[in-house]
Amino acid sequence: RAVMASHASVHAARTADARVHRIARRGMPSRHATRVVLSCRAASSEEDTLDPTTVVVAVVTTSSCPHCRRAKTAMTAAGIAFEEIDASSPDGIVLDAARQLSGMRTVPQVFVGGTCYGGADDVEVGIGNGDLARQVDDAGARARREGDEPVPVAIRDAIRDAKAAMDDAVASDEVAVVDGDDASIDSKHYEKLERMCERMASEIAPRDAWVFAGFPAWPPVVKERAVVSGDDIVKWLDANDDDNDEGDSIQTARALMEAGLVASVGLRGHGFDGADGTHAWRTQLFRLSDHACVPTRWPELTPGCINARRRWRGSNRRPARYVARDLRARITSLYDEFLSPDGTYVDYAGMKRSPKFAQYVDAAAELQTVDLRSLTRDEKIAFFVNVYNAMIVHVTCVVGPPSGGFFDKLTFFNRYRYDIGGYAWSCDDIEHGALRGNRPGAASVGAILGKPTLSPGPFASDDPRRAFTIEPMDPRIHFALVCGAKSCPPIRTYTGEGLDAQLDAAAEAFVTGDVEIVDDSNSTVRCSKIIGEWYAEDFGTDDASRLRWMSRYLPLGSTKCEEVDAILGGGGEVKLETAEYDWTLNGEY
Image (cartoon, rainbow, N blue to C red; front, side, top):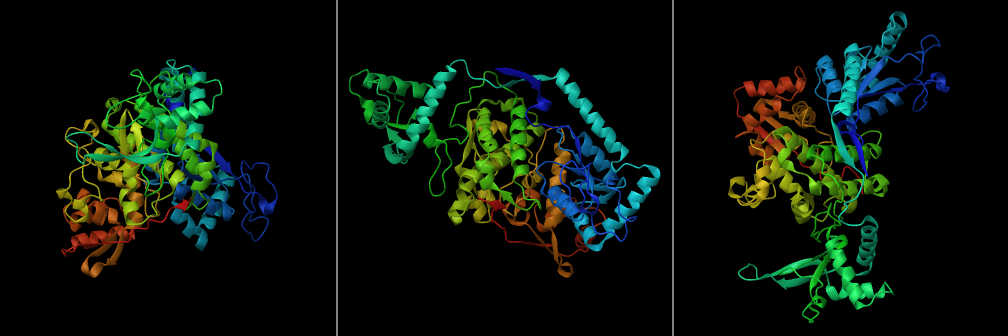
């Protein structure tokens, strides 16, 4: 059936939402608590204890933000009540208002008595030295005298505007959200074939087979992976349906092919026709979708697209940006649920067992139908970044991180693919082909030799995917893409509407935590391999221009910003060193 709803409210797209975390006095339960009840920090007297109904701290957060989780956990442990403002809304109204007040590009943004206190690092330092507690007490006393609210008026107004915008979108911009089946195949019949294919795949072991590739192909033979013979399929059907004779089994095998659950492989197309009486199908090779599209660990290869185990059977096509928005909401919801309280650890094993993960995998099949030609440049960047990050989480949940040594890491980002609009896209295709304007990746021969221009990009001149390359490339995309390793940026979400500010925030968060002054006397700075080695050409022609690029994203007035400015203005030769990249998984598989 088709359900009509606004694209702004599809599945988990959210408006700003205020959630109050109150702390009970002296460990007594609070009637005002909306989540957990904790003991307040120690007070010298009953009079010095903050009234539990007086909340003077507001925290602006976004979904799946590890630093937001870290700040909230620290304040909860310190007994500091706060009101949380979820600024994950795709329109960015609330986040823009907070940025204008705080001057910060990143989240969380913590306000005490309506004044910006800082981010997660500032909160942890303030808790450690007692400054945050003193400011909370002062703001609490002022609030009791003057009735101040913890959330600045501008942010309150933005929350109201965001909700109004959502209501307008629901009223005027409806999009068909499909929760139904393709009428071309009977739903019950398809479900029966689907269960049959799943069971068959579990009982017939696939194998690899060398086949003749045809003339003048080179090499003349190729290895077809995860295949079975036609005889394997028909014999299984004969054995598992007592009412079938051989003819009925062949008809069922044809139905499986028609439903996209079985595909022929090899030199030329073939099926289960048997019209010439030769029964050639017995020795022909086929591939079951359940064998082709389930991610496998190194050194095995996955021949099919991992979101194409089942054909998308919705009755309507949704615009690509709505499909990506839906998938983004699903994956960030999962990430939020399985992110540790301190924001440093993701329980991928628990995520894989979650029913929500199975729902995400099913929903990812809708990417098969999208038309990327309708996207603007910013929408295309946001689309590809969100899909890349979702695919990484998908693969990590199923097979874990690359742990098989050098060649596992070298090929990991090109081994798994999504079917997007009828084309197969790997993470390398998305990053280097689309987002970097068809430039060679860090694993190319030229890049390994230190001469990236020796290697071509992933798309040949006649590759239809070249129509979706983004030029000029934006170096900030490197801080938006997540590989699941500890040295990677944290997962975020991106929208075409607010892309520039979102990429700025990602760049600032990464650069601020990444740049380290090694020796200012000889202008030596340490940075990530992403900037200083693997993709150095994306950030400048020499070390000085790369450091100048990074300096734009250091907070003005910070010690690190002043040190970098001094190095750039000193006239010496700038030298960039690169830190070792930590490939350890940012969680448990």
